[in-house]
Image 1 (cartoon, helix red, strand yellow):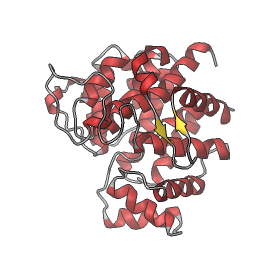
Image 2: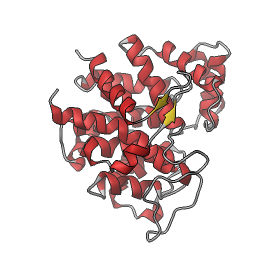
Image 3: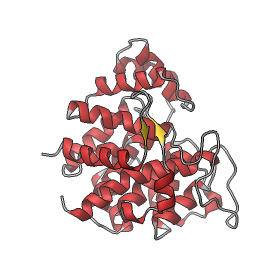
Length: 309
């Protein structure tokens, strides 16, 4: 791996946490007018710069990959269950139902099947928000990246659109790591990770949408649409993140996905220093551990070395 790719991989990991933290105070709020956009880390339910469940679940995935050297769904389910028991503040209904079954000792496949049978149309963004560690760990193995991206989604979100969105986002990261321009990377990712027809339409039309048309809800279609819109209609990490989080609604999740993509496109050094210096979070599975820039960079470096061929 050359230094330019390392810079983009680090940008992905840090960018995801930064986008999450930037969107945190705007979650569940209205879309802000274009002349009143929030451009700095501000406090919300948490102190300014604090990331949320989006990054915490990504760190659980990263921990599992580092511990196992591969994607082990049983190990991942156990880590998610332990995370839930640690009492995170903001967990989606579908995710909570699945993880509660894990915590009760139900096998992950049975737990997911039970929840999805009760809610067959459930297609939330809880797996796409956390999928980037697979792209980092499998940066040199596209086939393995696609398989593991789909599997990590199925651990909690087996809906076809959730599974496909995770594979697509990580395929896009794979090409961004290699320095492709975002539009070309998006096209290649669609070839590598075929999408269901409705989701494909969302991806193809995202850059043509007006900001007032973007729902930016917890639906995986909306999150993918907003993140791609931010990546493909701007020319810097800062603008991609700012434009997406100020759509409101599920701002932190869309911000996390957009931040991972823009971080991979522009690299760590392109992320505003005031944001990287402010980003922070507590990892519940490591008592007393505060995550900041250095820890996120170290996690990216270790992930990139853990599963290479």
